[in-house]
Length: 172
Image: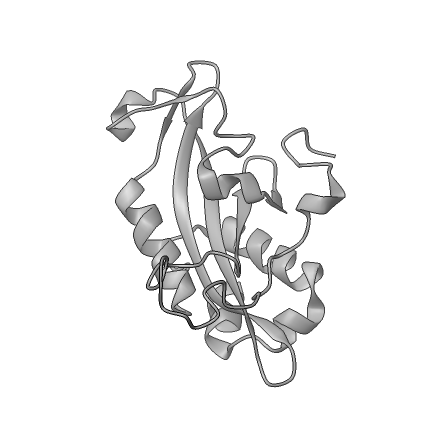
């Protein structure tokens, strides 16, 4: 098992839509974005793995810990590339499915304790995933294949009920 992979079984589940926390009352919190049906998948092309890491939702994944974020990618001297992929699961007529999938680059140099990510890109792609958009065309082929295999293996039924757009963009 990869040392970056969480071993806690509890973390290895996609979050699926829960009830409306406002119950339609429209009071405090109305209009806020709920991330309850979004999960984060780390794709590591260096180790040829992909895994669920819910701590990435708060920039606390294993690869993000103990690093300082730099404002420019040039400030990260020897980076390893990772992808944080925001995956939104929606309830379809027959089954839940992967509705939105959007990947964001993350560069990490653990020995020098530095990292770079574009916060605007992460925020925009999280929002796009919530809206059911598929944004993976900028990912390298190996990373797309790892994501494809992970999503398909994680839940075959989710994969089967996903959009043809997702399947075609991840079909390498």
